[in-house]
Image 1 (spheres, helix red, strand yellow):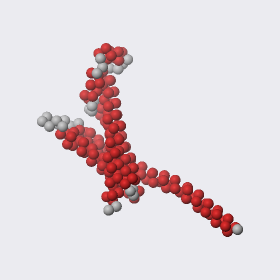
Image 2: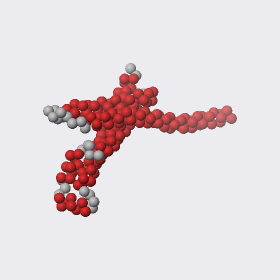
Image 3: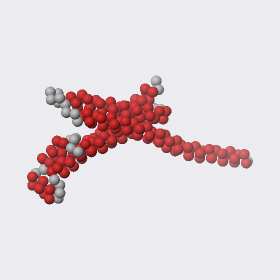
Image 4: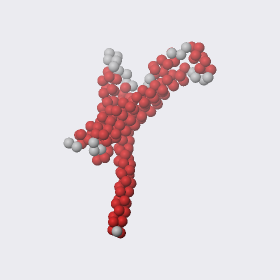
Length: 197
């Protein structure tokens, strides 16, 4: 009788211990994905910064779209794919399948895109990026409305600055981080297939 009771108690304790270990394993596995993703995002963010600076170089007069079309856009895709692969490399044995690789790649790419968005907002604030966009917003406002806004302290230069920064936030920050996360997740999904061959 006592042997049966002891076995039941041991079985209950073992089951309780296993239930406690499962969430701990999940927390450890998700924690092991965060650090590699953040490390790779710093490298990817630096690559995006370099591409932004290359995009600011004026193209030759006879080839107006060379800089953007032939260098920056493919470079952006390559940097994002490499960021996902690098996140997989940093994660090492934590990435066993394409789903885990996609998760760590998405995290790395998303944060790299956020970094690129912050840099773009600074460049727009200093008048280096999206200059024509800010001036375009000011030209859409009637002179009478500009005078009313000037009475509240909103000069045309302040409106152009706000327009540039908001455009950088939306284009480079929001859309850029989603696109970067998408391509980096593809790179992360490719990593297990390359590493387990």
